[in-house]
Image (cartoon, rainbow, N blue to C red; front, top):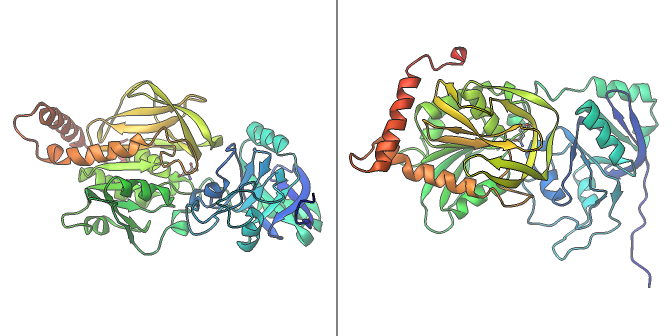
Length: 418
Ligand SMILES: NC(=O)CC[C@H](N)C(=O)O
């Protein structure tokens, strides 16, 4: 029996790291050249969701899984309207896809979308290099570009922009607001700031009866408050690319949301921005967390979750004690068990919380889906928080929390006070 395997014509390709190390291999995807930040992802599955996650804008993804493309691409798993990854590095591309859901080969999709990649290089050696030296800028050059002298290519890489200091959310955000309707009975209306939102996030909210109004990254408090008859029941800040230290305008908006005591939930970039709004700093991790099997401890329940991650930055908050901030007491609710990195924040005196990882799990395990239910709980409790009833214990507890926050917020709740 002969297999109907298409013969792949591959041109020479070279990957050039900014510290001068090079890997020679073969072209994969589109021919040409690309630059970005080299990051590795350890997910064995879910490459379609990864490639179309806007948080990967300006990053060249190195897959540690040795065989990529086996299940092709399909019409259901895109997390946005296009591939955002700046480049793709794999060891062994699948010769053809095999899945009942596949509508085409991954490589055809990469080619059509102009995504330059490289294959047949030692991705284990490259990953170890990035672990030892840290994420760094990289260039992938294939076809005619690969024939240029190496010092010239290194120069291209070294003059490309760094990830630290890059403000990228506006480059991936929607330009127009849009609505994802609630499935079934509409229970709440949420304003979701699109900093690079993944499609699964509003989808999971809609399944819980939330009507999600997705807003451009440039939205103001007036835009947020204009939603619904009396403003939204909750505000959500999404994941997104770039350095959270650059997002001053979004942090300003978030402070206004916290001041208005609107229930808030943030994921990934949204977690970093909540951290900043509360007065914590953010910093760049040596090589980041990217994959779908990272162990995280939920300190509320003591349970360990296996979770999906994609972050290169993290919040700098103490994990061993509560912090007193301009917005009341805050605690680190989730911690990564591999390295003690802050994976979640919870305000104890305000209806606000966030996680650094991905409860929307696209791709990834579903252990953390309960975090969407917590958002519903916060929105349900909102009337009690704002105007507590006189008798119930729960309302009294809410009231005392609220007063605590009011006392603490009475000081100069500004950036400079932290
Ligand atoms: N997925 C995200 O939201 C990533 C957030 C941020 N760009 C980081 O790399 O840490």
